[in-house]
Image (tube, rainbow, N blue to C red; front, top):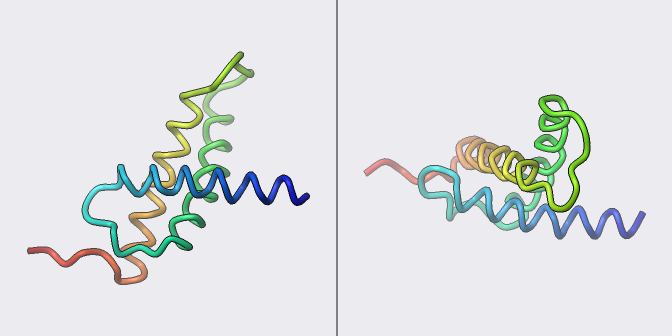
Length: 91
């Protein structure tokens, strides 16, 4: 249980930061805790969507699965920035 929580935090932080980096616009105002939550959501939802679209396990690192997770995290970071009112104002 502790191991799963630790991996969720580590994976959520990495995927969340990658999602924040590829999210469109300026998302620097989103706090780290919200980025980690979006990353954890990106890991879970991206993994679920990837499983629906593609079947079977791959040998080695499944890069496409990680790309799906980062894209979902980027969408979640964008939604979080807009819903918290932290999106950058248009210039």
